[in-house]
Structures are given as structure tokens and as C-alpha cells.
Length: 488
Image 1 (cartoon, rainbow, N blue to C red):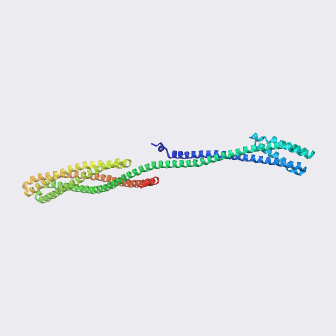
Image 2: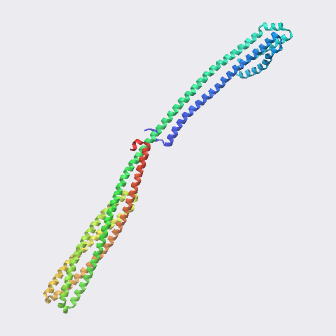
């Protein structure tokens, strides 16, 4: 694994720019050193030219002094001494400058004595020409001491000039080498620095592009998975909301049916009480038996009708109880599914899990109440069948006449007892129906809460889907910036 990939962005940039800066610093230091040496060499070149110029000036001034001396020796006219007099002051100045320029070269300092001797020779001949005449001065000139001194001066000056020329050539070569080295360092150093910057920039860009591209790819894949999950969650929440709405409607209808059953049971109980009162009245009014037979028949017919109606109602209650039982089972299953979905939703589904648990408990209670009501209805059906049979027996007894009056009184008593039992059963049915209505109302409230939670879940899923879509778009934009060929 490349250790460079483990570096942070800042460390990579510091390394890249640091290496580039190091290359530039090396190039700058070497260039500065060569430039410094070149400037110093140029100073020595100028110094050599200055020494040659001063040597040439010194020889020229000596020639001027010798020319003035010769003119004066030949003519004796002081006018010819003007070059001599002018050269005397210049020679001392030039000689002092030459000593200053050649202080680092002892050989070039040897001109002082020959020049002093030459000037002494010139002065001697001029004074002899002035005091003793031409011949005396000519003898000094003819002994060739002045010529020898001048030759010596010229030789020393020539040697110094040659030495300076050699130094000029050497320094010119050194300047050329330094200039070439400086040019080489600047050219290749800049080239290598540029290559280093390009290589480091390419390496950093490539590594960052690969890492960021891989990260963006993961984000894009995660966004796609999250988007699919959000779509599934939104679809499930929508279906759940629809199912809750249907359940709420069914429970509302069931609540209405329960209330209607309670009202019917209340009416049955009331009719049973009236029947019991009528039976007791018939038992106490034996003298009015014949007159009351018709009324008893009507009551019996009414009882038969009510019993038949009660049987129908009990059958309807049984059908409703089947619906309630099936609804309780579906609600229990739905609550279990909701609990599973809530557990998968994590922290945001905890409230929905509590509501689902309550719905499940309520469904269990409704199932239990349904079983109890079914048992009561079975009792009611048995009592109704018994009552119907008793009323048919009473009808036959009424037709038989008064010879069975005693049996009729007993039958009335049985009727009273059965009506009392029927009344009690009707009251129990009424109470159970009221409890069922209360339970259904609780289920209705719980279903409403679940419906609201489903709507909130659907809204949250929609927001999540929108956020995931935005995140997917951002990942695509970022990938398009990093790696345009992979964005498609």
C-alpha cells in the first residue's frame, strides 16, 4: 500500500510545496553564489584594465618627460621643458595610483626605483645642459644609463601588462564558466523545479481524486440504497395509512352496530319486563281468564314475535361478533407488523411501537369480550328457543280452554321465570354490548393515533426521500468535478 495515500491533504500540500520550494532555494543559492562570483570577477577584470591603463599612462608620462628633456638638450630653450614639467606631477600621481592598485602584487611595485632613477637622470641632464652646456649633458646621455633605465621600466611595465592580460584571460574564462554554470543551474534547476511541481501536483491531484472519487462513489451507492429504502418506507407508510383509514371506517361502522345492538337489547329487556308483569297479572286474575285469553294470546304472539326478533338480533350479534373477532385478529396481526416496522425504524418508531402494543392489547381484550358475548348469545338463543316452545305450549293451552287453566297458571309461572331469565340475559347482553362499544371506541382512538403516526411516517419518509435525492445530486456534482468521465 502506498504510504502517501495515508497522508492528509495538508501534509501532502506541505510536502509538495516544500519540495518545490527546496528546489527553488537550491537554484537561488547556487545562482546567487555564481552571480556573486561573477560580480567579484568583473571587479577584478575592471581592476586589471585599470592597472593596464595606469601602466600605459605612466609610460606615456615618462615618454613626455623624456621628450621634453631631449628637446631642451637639443635647443636649450625652456619652452621644450613644458612636457617635462607637466609629466613630473603626473608621474608621481600615476605612480601613487599604481602602488595602490598593485598592493597585492609585489613584483608590480618594483617600478618605483627605476622611475626614480630615470627622473633623476632626466633632471641631471637638464641641469648639466643648463649649467655646463650641451656637451656635458650629451656625455650623460651617451653612456646609455638613461636608456637602460627606460628599458628596465618598459620591461617591468610589459611584464606587469602581460601578467594583467593573463589575469584578464583567466578571469574572462572564469566569468564565462560562472555564467555558463549560472545559466545551466537556472535553466535545468527551473526545469527540474517545474517538473517537480508538475509531478507533485499530478500525484496530489490523482491521489485526492482517487480517494475523493472512491468516497463519493460510496456516498452515491449509500444514497441509492437509502433512496430505495426511503421509497419502500414511503410506499409502506402510504399503504399503512390507507389500511388504517379502512380499519378506522370499519371500526366506526362496528361502533354504530354495537350501539344499535345495545338499543335493541334494551328494548328486549323492556319487553321482557312488560311480559313478566303481564304474566303476574294473568296469574292474579283467574276470574278474568276467558276475557284475558285473547289478550294473553296477543301477548304470547307478541312474545313469540319478540323472541323471534330476539333470535334474529342474536344471530345478527353473532355475525357482528364474527366481524369483531376477525377485526381483532387482523388488528392483532397489524399491530405485530407495526411493532416489527417500528423496531426497524429505530428511535423514531418507539412511539409507534407503544401505540402498536396498546392496539394489540386492546385487540386481545376485544377478542376475549367477543368470546364472552358469544357465550351469552348462545344462552340467549337457548332461552329464546325455550321461550318459543313455552309460548307455543301456552297457545295450545289457550286453545284447549279452561280445563287446563291450572296448567296455564303453571305455564304462566314458567313464562314469568323464563321472561325473568330472558330479561337478565338481555341485561347482560346490554352490558356486554356497552363494554364492547367502549372497547371499540378505544380501538377507534388507537387506530386514529396509528393513522396519525402513519401520516407522520409518510411525511417523514417523503422528507427523507427528498434529502436522499439532494444528497445523490450533490454526490453526482462532486463526482463530476473530481472525475467527469465517471459522473455519467
